Image (cartoon, rainbow, N blue to C red; front, side, top):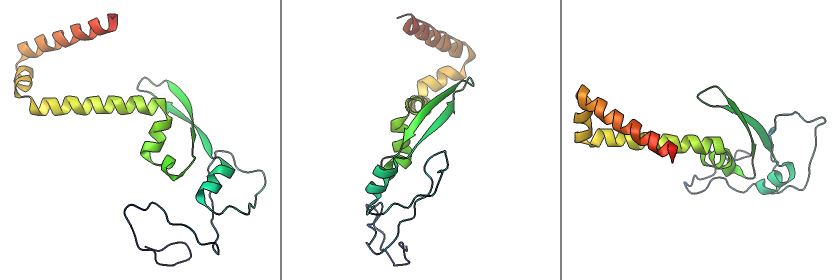
Length: 145
């Protein structure tokens, strides 16, 4: 692996990014949706945290749900971790809801794969209908509560 300036940097799984030596230049790309009016040279930023604190990158994102309705949210980036899946999901109520829904679907799949009685009940059309009716009744009861 090569670091900035072509120097070899030994990879360490626990290290996300190494410090940049003082005699190097950090190039920063556009983090926002709107282009700058005039290029800006900022001196004295010696760490990535300094760059994030100075520029405070953020962007408005529109998510679309399964029914086609849009939901707009603002995502802010305060460090490199905010660009990862966990960092983005932590900022978005919409993505958090989708994550919960995904986790529930995986639990259902796991249950279907491991529960022999449930699989057997769903194979028979009569017991499948009775099971679905029981589930629908439970959902209706929960909705009314």
